[in-house]
Length: 555
Image 1 (cartoon, rainbow, N blue to C red):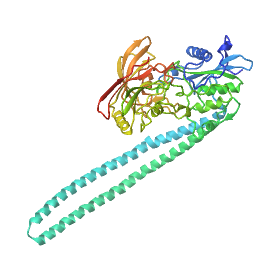
Image 2 (image 1 turned 30 degrees about the vertical axis):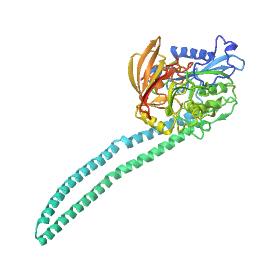
Image 3 (image 1 turned 90 degrees about the vertical axis):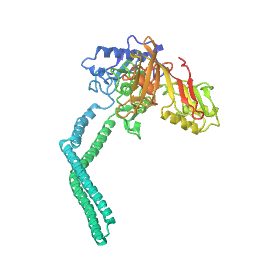
Image 4 (image 1 turned 180 degrees about the vertical axis):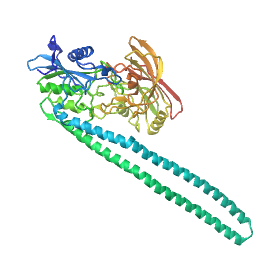
């Protein structure tokens, strides 16, 4: 039996064993059998692992995903395997955990030297960018530019003074009667003007020669930097390809493919193949164990980007793990990947709250998309239903969007001009929206403002993450409405309209630190997301009337 396989004691009853392997992409709590194995792993983590320092997991941003896979041996015994994403305490191999899916011996043959080479290239790059010689060369060019600007400014001032003096002299000559004297004086003034122009040309030529000499050294430095960056990129790609070639990805049918082939024509993202789920499935297949159920949970401090809480279960990411797990599960009787937004919604939805010849406001139900999705089964949406309801309506109709899981007031226009006017009102922040939500946690303060820039998680769309460098500004005002046990009801006022803004601002430790109840992406899955757009106020673009609408939350 493989190292790390722990048999469940007492053995689970047959009724607890799933008839099909649950999809690793299904959010929410795992099946009881996987939950039991995960609880046992969490107990081991709380007690500490022999010889492994887990303190880094509790440092800011130091947590990581762990996973368990319940398996059946060829003789029918039930046990579990454990794994962690990436490295744990700086180690790929930890006793009791599934190993990585690459050959460590093969990687060790080239990676230490590769790391040293890349580190040397990085040091040389820093020297070319921030080294003493680079700083001195840039300073010399900056000093020369400043000196040239000062000299040119002084010359311009002298020439301006001379020009004014010549203009005054020409005015005096124009009023004099001696034409011969005038001609001689005017010629002298013209000669002085040409002399100024020649002086400016000489100064420009002198500056150009000095600048060419000074910038030549800097240009040489920049060329060396660009050449080094090209070399570093080429070597990084070559080493990354060697790393990719070292992974052994096997399906339930016993077929093998490289990581590169699984992501083709795209390049595999960093960390692909190192998540817990691929390690677990690969380890099970290698030892002829039949996978029964999988669970992955976050352990330790939340990531700085937000969206993960200790002890919460999360589905496999679709960016890094999607292509890998779909291949690895081929040949295993498994549930299909869930398709959110394909659930049946009553035909009379969404209900109209306000309607006139120019616009309509509806109460969007939870589970109905605002606009059609990319999948053929995701065409049903507010937009499609409004097009059927108002066949004479033209233009884009839907003015803004609500998440699939969010219910509440949604504004649509029945003609392009009204649509454009309302979108301008949104852009100028002239439309007021109020949401109500129940949060899974106690919020300490009573009101406040959250400002956390957001961007999409490229490895796990449609999740958003906090990114203070590349994120777009996102601002939410909030106030507490009610407290009940360990839950808090809040009013949320988005001042910007970023995707999942309210959900991530609620869940992130720098925001409210309490995910919205039922949030399958940033918290814990539930019957529904308890987030509802309950109030909308705007100036009607055709009548000028101030429209104020409310729609109480259904929770």
